[in-house]
Length: 572
Image (cartoon, rainbow, N blue to C red; front, side):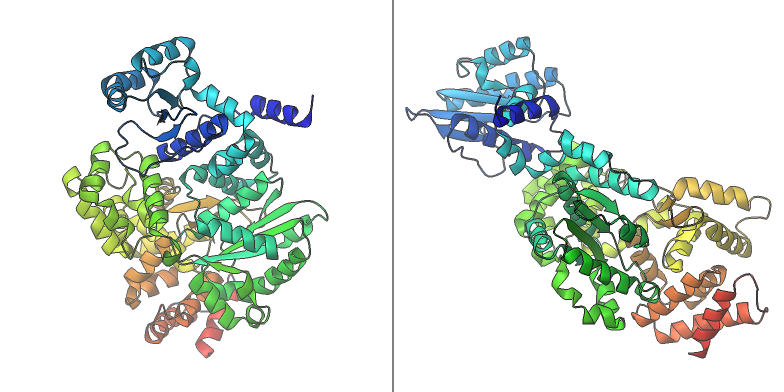
């Protein structure tokens, strides 16, 4: 048995795609590519729209027209498909009157199913070989592995790649990150940014994916990591500290290191902790090792400020490894594919979806100046629009596009209570993840001061709040480098919303910073001033409030670093 035959058999026995991570358009392209390989012809595709029963077309040796039709009906069963074909599609085929008709579906088909399908499309389907079900498509993928590799999202869901991901020795937050990467694959749209970032990784072995909030930095970085795991690289997810990555660096072993948001929300904290120097030194080691890749992400504004404040980031010329994603780097076609993919996977009702197609309203979305993937995720989330009527949905979408900073407003004002808002605000103003014990203490201080809770029920209030907030606004993480659970924001855009809402309210800001007895909160306060997100006047007012509340009540031996930092800030 030759190598090629063994490879085909291995793929046959290992791969059993159900194609659920492809949308219907991606499935059509896959079917056309498989038929093109099988028939050794070029299959014409047609622009999206009402297909009139034609998803692909080619001409036989006798110049007879051959029509290809694909139905990706993973959300419905075979009975529903049969009814639809008999009612609508059979008539379309009769009007076209092709010499040969090939039908493909992602559903598994029995021998009886194929007989029924042949009868529905008689006399245009002359052989059951021209009826392709799930198993037939997997057989063709085994015969034509180049087609599998061409379809990136399909290849990433292969059993070999999935096994490599699942067999990664990860724990806690790293395991959650791996699962997030796998789950997000079906939502991914391969754009030019993908190939450009891979080119940079192949040349320099490191890439820093930058861009502003919501543009898709983490999504791109996730799939770059996924891509390299598929190529046989070991996945090494860095949490907060490079120590484990440095210790885990194995000579000669293919490894991809992934450090999401390496400067964090607070660049001053990263620089003071010398994260910049250690990251850059690690990049130097990776650059000379052809078996290693290093993927990092950072907001453009945070990295820019970091370069300004860190001599190393400037001297080391991190610029050459930076790849920035901007709205302008997404073509109108890319935007349309992103929108379509979100709609396909969203679970939105057909009535809501139809509102986006009336008079080509989707063009308003794809051409909008504020288009970004995170915003598209918001406006196509059925849970967020369940209270929006069908008639009002289009206006809702336009409003969110025109005022993207308000995407969290409905959640904060209508969907959560005051105690949950307080907890989220405390995490935001801490500037980074806060230990659960510190958050509990700050929460208790704030709700008791406000009279929202009593000493007898404050514990119940906190525990109830955590059940509501974790998984939607907050995330609870257990790290190997920290003592006890850490609480962080579920989505970094929450911080943008909260800071914009309170950036002129010294009384509100002061009250929250008073409750936070963490050094990180003080570093964050200074960072907000340095990045001009808080005015100097407001910064001084908050410092005065902290001075009155903390210093005048006496030095606390429990938080010496906090008081040392506060005194230094007042002195400065």
